[in-house]
Image (tube, rainbow, N blue to C red; front, side, top):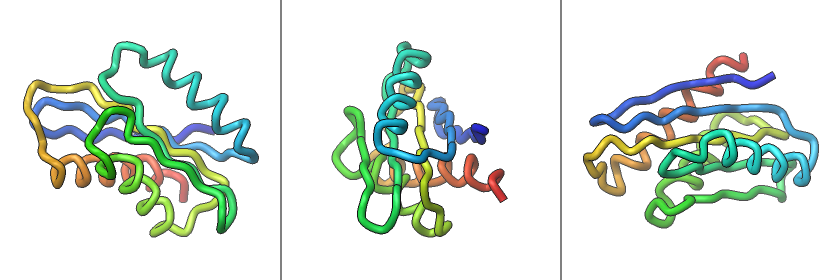
Length: 117
């Protein structure tokens, strides 16, 4: 099951998707699927966690540390495991700055994972 969320800020839309995964290969396959489905988006950022020592993040063109890390921190704060969160950004024409981006990716992630429990 895929849990969806949405966050909007100054014209930008952040569509978020959280789903259970069982392997790194599965995570990679799903990320490719999201990139194809949302090929018209400016950024397709993600983080996933598989156990205590395996995680990956990707900012996908956003400034370093402003997308993937906030997604992963939100996953960890919720104490979730075996999960992939993808956040798709449609740019709205206004720069949000690094702080604004970090908030946006965190809130988009919260919006999706809040539906899990």
